[in-house]
Picture 1: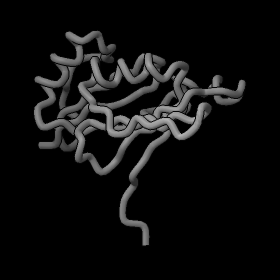
Picture 2 (picture 1 turned 90 degrees about the horizontal axis):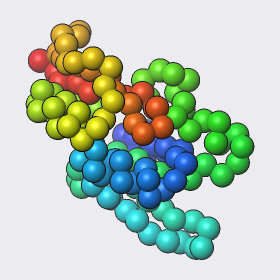
Picture 3 (picture 1 turned 90 degrees about the vertical axis):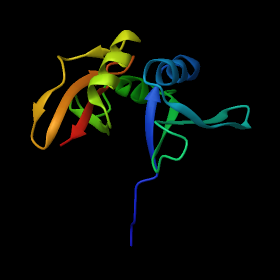
Length: 129
């Protein structure tokens, strides 16, 4: 039986640019950064080192992949991140230059606000009641 999701692949234009955004703007950590061959760098980031799910940053190579950068979920929210203090995280991320779509507001079951990454992928920040 399936017990959890462990990795989400995120297509990016540039690995270093994306790594810098996720580390410096969102406060993520590098989980893995390893060269397997000259053409394959395995780079994963996560909100915390012990996070159950990591994000693999993959450079979009083909024209089809390049079209998906910033729109992997068709304009819908790609991932919802849970916060233990949404006001603090919102303030820190906003000060770091993250683009938000409003301010944290009451949503079903808690508070939430949408934001985007450097390429325009849509995410939600959520704190349950």
